[in-house]
Image 1 (cartoon, helix red, strand yellow):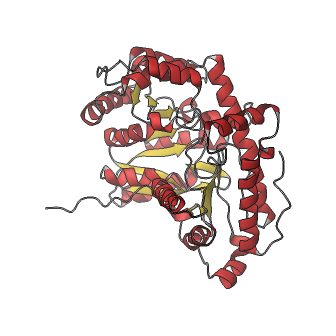
Image 2 (cartoon, rainbow, N blue to C red; image 1 turned 90 degrees about the vertical axis):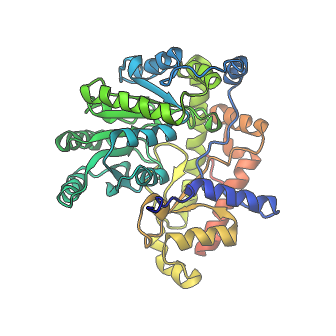
Length: 435
C-alpha cells in the first residue's frame, strides 16, 4: 500500500495555536504570526446572517443566484466583467484554491516567497510545486523570465506544469507587482499554455486606491481564474466564504464543469446563511465600502509604524503597499546576530523572537524561501484590540484621529521597537511614531 502524501500543519495556524497555549499558561506573548484580521463584524452583516439562520437547504453547488450575481457586480466594478454563471462560491477561498488545483491538474508554478499553503496544496493533489523567485519588491508574481526557464526545464525533465499561482497584492511581502510585471506574466502564461490562478483576496487592501493592484485577468482573460473572499477586507475569516471567477473561454467553461464536480464531492454547497450575508457584502452598499476603507487606513497607519521600527534597527524592507504584512530582511545585521545570538538563518531568528521575547513570527522557510536568508514575516493584524470596543475605536481613529495614540496599539508598536532594539543592540525609540 503506498504511503500517504506527507502533510504538515499550516505554519500560520500552528503558530497561532502555540501562542494561544502560552498565553493561557500566563506568558506574555505577542502574535505577529498569522494574518487573521482582529476587527469586529459589521453590524449590517451580522444582522443579515442572523436573519438567514433558517436557511438550511443545500442549495446550488456553485452558490445561490443572488450571491453569484452580487459577486459578478463586484468584479464588474473592477473592470472584470463576468457572467454570474461562471462564478463559483465555496467555503473559503482556501478551499476553492485547492479544488481548482484538482480541477486543473498537472504541476504548479509557485512564486518564492509565497503563501504557506500553495505548495502544500499542490503536493496534496499529487502535483509538484515548481518554485520561481519573484522580482525584488514585487511579491506574489514569479519573475516572468525565470518562469519561462523553469517551465522549459520542468518539461524537459518530464514534469507537467499546467498552472501558475499568483497573489496580487502579496502575502507575505505586503507588496504589489507592477502592471508591467503582471502584463509580462500574462504573456508568458499564454506562450507556455499555463492557467493563471490569481489569488486576489487582498485586492481591497491596497493603500493607494488610485493605483489598485492589476489583475492578470485584464491581460490574459481567456486563461486567468480569479479568487477572492471576505476574510481580509471585512475580517470574516470564521465565516469561510470564498468566490472564484472562471474565464469566459473554452478552457474556462471546461474548468467550470470540473470545478463543480470537485466541489460536489467535497463540500456540496456553501453554507446558505453565510451566502445571504455575503451577497449583501459583495453588493458593496455604503456601510460596507466605508468599513473596508476604514480597515485599509488602519492597516496602513499601523503597519507603517511597525515598518519604521524594523528599518530603524537596520533591517531591509521593501515599501509596504497593501495588507498588514511585513517581510523584513536582517541580512545587514547578520554578523551581529551570529556573534551575539548564534542565529544564522530565518528559522533561528523566528525561534529566538518566540522563545526569548514571546513574539510570534514566521520564518522565510514557511513561504518557500531558503533557510539561510535572515528573513521573517510579521503581521500587525492582532494589534487592534482584544475587545470589539477597542477594535471599533481603532477603526474610528483610523479615519478621524490617530490609531497609534490608542494605548493598546501604542503598547504593541512600542513592544516591537523594544524587542528589535534589544535583539540588535540599537537604541530604544522613545515612543511609537505617529502616522
